[in-house]
Length: 402
Ligand code: SF4
Image (cartoon, rainbow, N blue to C red; front, side, top):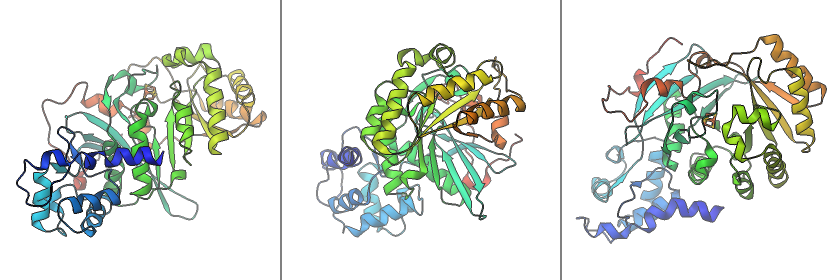
């Protein structure tokens, strides 16, 4: 895996020489790609040192760039004040850019949760959420919920993102920059990353793995602090397990049997529950990391105690190492689903616990009430933005009622 990821991150440099001959840089030729954008974000310190050397600079200049993009969070090469002007100009002339996108809109909830829309270079919008929480000792844990695709093609029946359609996969740096944007907004380090925003991470696994590597090695977020979520895409859990990441796999089940699951998650038709559970067991055996099962409780659909008992049976049939995270549904506009009553949720929990399944209920955070995943983006964009409204700076995020 390390080799594969290294390949992802070094490719822009490896192909760098082709273009630099056409530039006015007096330093030695650099292997630049013809069409790939040269984005600094996502590159390792080693890659950046090599880039500096290729551009006729000393290697430590690469380390300076590393600090500037990952720690100082500079967004423009011309903001690299520690670098000589000639080197900055050479980077720009060679077509390099940092790879950061502006914040188009943000919404802050009373409990401190902030959802932002980033405007990508093709004018598409993606959602990212920063969720602060205090632990028992009073220190703040900041979780970034990142998107992996612009929209999602899977169209789960209850999901606002699915209803908004699919545009494209995100590139690795477009995932990494979401975490940096959250750190910048909160002026606090992100401690946890969950790949649970817009999109199905397993449909964009190459970029997700490259972003995961970068967040771990360059940004400094522990693998155990990251969770990759999926509704299940055939063969991809096996592929992920082979990388032996020390990260949690979260599988969105939403139903205790195949028939019901197909009505909630249409893509389940191509991935029978038995095969999915088998792959989850394999993930646990290969990585030693517990699999979390996400289960959205939809009133009157999948929230009866008998469904909980059926779910417990399903999990026991596949061995141990599992945890269930229940998510009482938050209605979205135009949805036919309803949120279950609290007593129904508690009965579901009790039924699972009676069968020795560890379970937690996801708290409703401020934004959840009015802005489920995908809702904010759907409000602003169905197609790429044509008429651009003013962009919000990091210091003037809007406090909107939620
Ligand atoms: S729940 Fe996840 S996989 Fe399903 S449509 Fe929404 S974003 Fe896609």
